[in-house]
Length: 125
Image 1 (tube, rainbow, N blue to C red):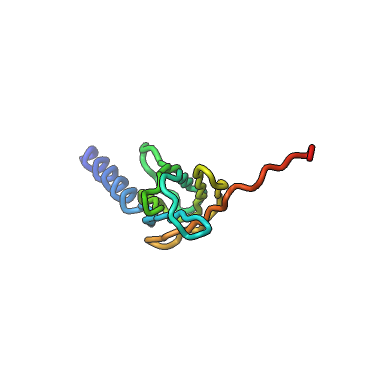
Image 2 (spheres, rainbow, N blue to C red):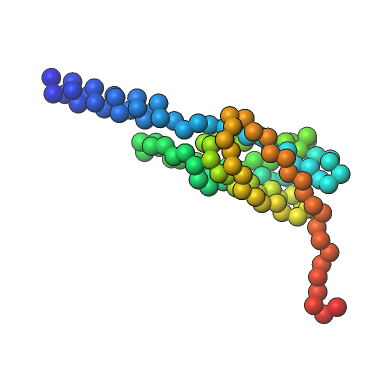
């Protein structure tokens, strides 16, 4: 009888942890240059900064995702918890982009415009 009560309590705790999943977001990041042309093979790093947390019962919690853009300049990030995220985009021949976004919707598309590199500055000139 006692083991049955303990087993019921454990099952209830596991069910509560599974039901307490934070709201998730499907995220797409569109990377384009200033002339609105897509930039392919750009590295996109998405880092979860803060927001809804959850008890995972020993599971590893993923807080960083690294993806690349496709030919259309779109990077699709796996579902992530809603909250604040930091997006960093690195592409050859362009300035690095970095910004923090608030994600509160179930689906969100972030549009990023990359600038060309600035001219080199030298104090000797």
